[in-house]
Length: 317
Image (cartoon, rainbow, N blue to C red; front, side, top):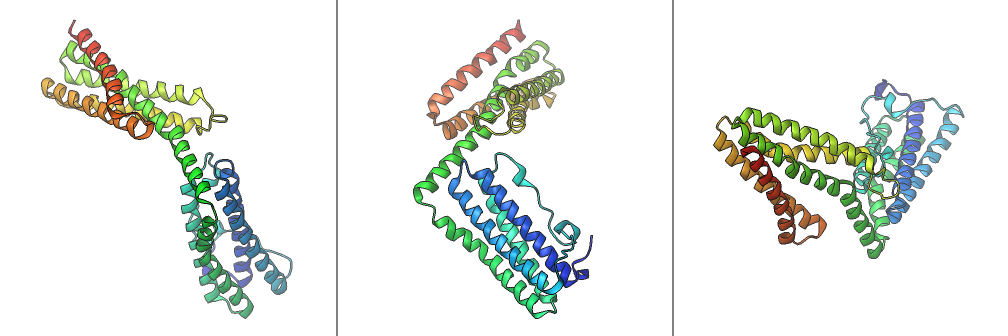
């Protein structure tokens, strides 16, 4: 990698052209990814991309007038000091909040680059253009806000509703399904082992195995159930990972107390953890699934108690 101080004015212009072209493509990628669910925000990124193309053309004209048509190949990753960018534009579905934060970071970095380049420029025309572009990049955040204000309240409300719906489909529902399965389905083998053996370490191993096994099973089941192309539920790998992780967490919650050597203390603590888990599940259903808390608690508690009782009865027999 080259140091910024070692770049010639031609290198700086070539790097600026490359950066503007890259930023244009990133904004176009954001617009393409968001167009179906967030058409008004996608239009905003289209206009931001047009701004970057205008900057690139100004830089190209100046480079031709100063150095001719040959443009050196120099990119952001070839120069020390630039922040490595995560390629979030390759993700589908793309988070609207992530794009906004990423765009802010882009503009800050680009403005800083132009100011530093202008300070080192010896040619008056180069310095003037770089200073102007630094000011333009500073205004890009204001431009985004101005463009955003053109989005009608109805359109903004519709986009917010779409964002909530996608969050529900892609994270909350898979996570809740995993948490419910892990918290409830592992109760029977765990407490059956506990009351059959009265051995805390053996009980913990059974709970650990049940939790990990259920997590793997649920992860594959969720990932293979829907590729998300029609339902909009997101990438199968992400949904499967969320479901599997929450399933394992739900099971491990009441298995961990059996690391305590005293059987009665461990069992009492496990009972308390189960109560907390069922309460958390009920709250999530109320918060995100619009289910009244008492109704959600009744549904979850009845199922949990039945499985819980089955495990105790089997272990005590």
